[in-house]
Every structure is written in C-alpha cells, then in structure tokens.
Image (cartoon, rainbow, N blue to C red; front, side, top):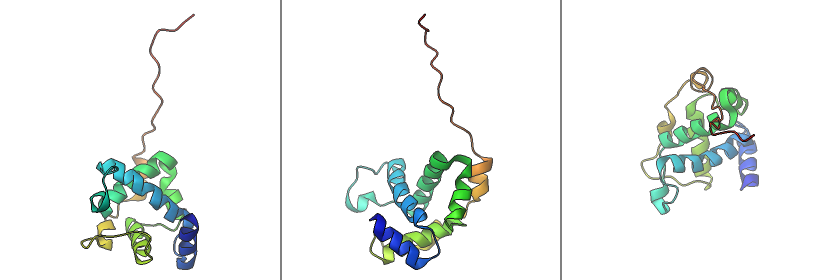
Length: 134
C-alpha cells in the first residue's frame, strides 16, 4: 500500500507522500478515539470531523508544537486539504466512503498554529514517588 500511496501522491503533485501515509496512520487513531477500533464493516466508519480529531491528536503526539510546520511542509495548509486527500484516495479506490460523506466534512479549518504551537502543553513523565531503596 505504501508504494501505491507514494505513486498517487506523486502523480497528484499537491501533497507529499508523507501526508498520505500520515492520513492512514491517523485513521487508526481516529477509530480508537471514536471507540470503533473493534467494529466491522460500515460500523467502523468515521466522519471527516472524527478523522480530523484523530489527526490532530496523532500530530500532537508525534510532532508536538512543530506539527503545523510539518503539515505545511507536506503541502497541507488547511483542514480542507485533508478532505482533498481523503477524496483523492476514495476516487482511486484506496478508501471507501458512505453516501453522506462530503469534502465539506473537513472544512473545520482550524488554525494550525493555534492548535499545535500556542496550545501545546508538554506531557512530562510521571515521577515515581515511591520509597527509594538505599
């Protein structure tokens, strides 16, 4: 699948192959967040909004406050770009859609800098407060 994604990305030319790969990784994250990771068939379907939530969480986890920069380096400038990638994959038989799905489901158009950089809160490791052995 990675080679097919790469070829599609290169032939389309708008977005980096890494954006396509990240989208696929984020779909699994979106399924987990929506509680549908064990569902089957059409019950596994996630909406465009749920995909965006999964992508934001995945990007924050992987790239931290640099996520907006990473997405832009892939050619993704607004949330609607993710919808364009999804529908490109649908049109090429690599993803399925349900009848009510539209590209406008991705038009949330959140501010990447606000979401990733300005709102970023580092996750520090928990300190072990148990007794220390001598």
